[in-house]
Length: 68
Image 1 (cartoon, rainbow, N blue to C red):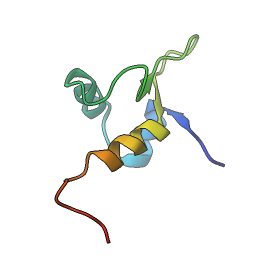
Image 2 (cartoon, rainbow, N blue to C red):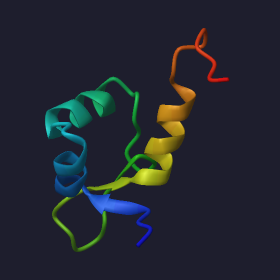
Image 3 (cartoon, rainbow, N blue to C red):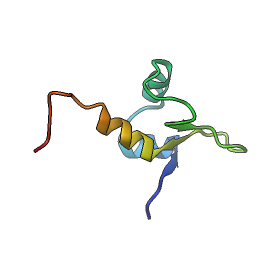
Image 4 (cartoon, helix red, strand yellow):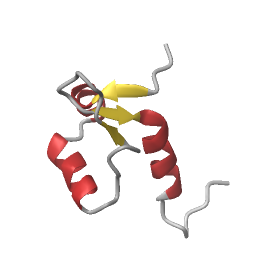
């Protein structure tokens, strides 16, 4: 199964990251609501867009590091 979005609790459980860490990324404008973190109508819990997080992770690595 290839998932593109997951509830924030599932994301935290699988990555070991805390909700507080995600909230700090949003506050610092590292992640954006509506892009990396989604509010789904009728659902209390926010969702994480895994495609956008993957894109962010790949683009935010050290510019001096290049995998060969």
